[in-house]
Length: 234
Ligand SMILES: [Zn+2]
Image (cartoon, rainbow, N blue to C red; front, top):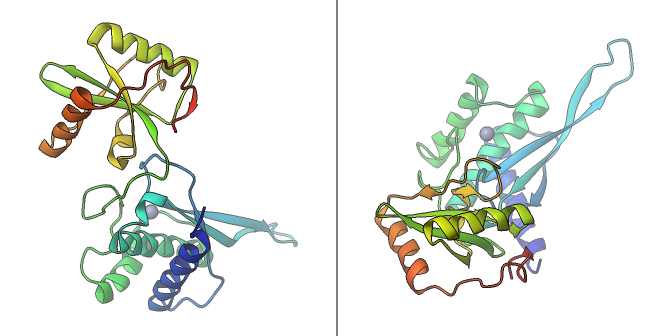
């Protein structure tokens, strides 16, 4: 995507800053922007192991890739916090061969927080909790229904046969309507087509979220002819 190179080098510079705070001088992580839309995780650190020759056949992590969700990158502080969290994992992997959020994670997080401020690195990075997500980099489908006084939603990046069948159920039973959206928080809703038996939708009780869904449901431009819309939204 346009501007990716510049963004990745900016993220690498951030990563260097936190590696320095942790006093780590080994290999740097590779940085990758995720193609995902779903906001279930904001960043992740994937270890790459190598088996060393010799009697023990010991496997050790020799490198990592830090993957960052694109919607994280539109808020500078959010991006920094997610990078700092993943850099802690990187150092864990390369010095101890493991990740996780145990005592060693907390120790390193505290070293960063002593510089960056209390609560900067948290054990979990998720929407809310001061983490701000921008729009997703591509549109996805969102189904909205009004049940028992609540606007409820579920979503899918694509419309497969299974997703279309489930939408059909919600439409017939609840008068559901289908739209496209780039609101990151909606990807935390139940995923369409995820289960054959329980066709559920998620309720977001916050007033602004109910208002967004109400407006979409009542005034939004519906996706019509789902058969034509198969594949990616937009
Ligand atoms: Zn983590």
